[in-house]
Image (cartoon, rainbow over all chains, first blue to last red; front, side, top):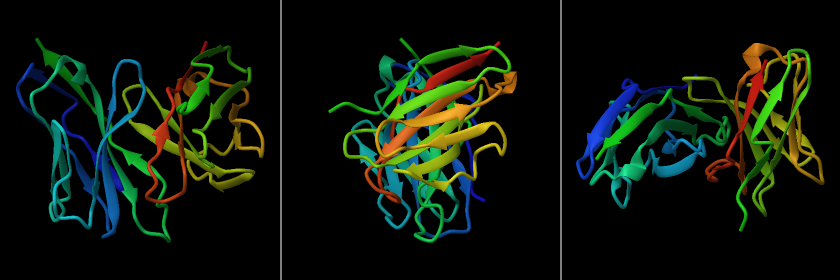
Length: 118
Length: 114
């Protein structure tokens, strides 16, 4: 079974600075997808960024980018120019890409609570 | 275009009562997923349904929990004889297809069992 580990329960960053959230995962599959979700105090789950394992290029969405290290099974999220609205719980998630497997089931880490200081 | 709707947003039940959680997927989506988030935890997969079919219920507790997604109307997650350990946030997500289709999440239902 796949597992997702987020080793930082809490992180803090100054407004306008950069912060990196860590995520590692364990899988025997070669085809899969990785995600970062944001959960603000409203508890709504919002997709931040998505990475396909077969792509070598790291995904980027505006101020959000990932560092995907497939061999190391590492998938960190970098938030540049942090804003107060970035304060939230961030979850790393894994989804199998195998058509014969559970390629719909998201496996989540326990989350990292990000605080942005003004 | 309305997103995934869940109701109620908050539900309080006494031990032994039944809880019914509703989820209306996004327009055009026929795949529904239920996840549970216990305090201080990430979301855990419970069940995957398509219209009138349960595709995968491997994450559902064997007793007291059931889910359905009828041909008409919302998907329902039903918890019978609730216990304090059922207190959690229950999230529904929907997608257009399965596998590789982005799952869009609803705002969740927070169930409190007293």
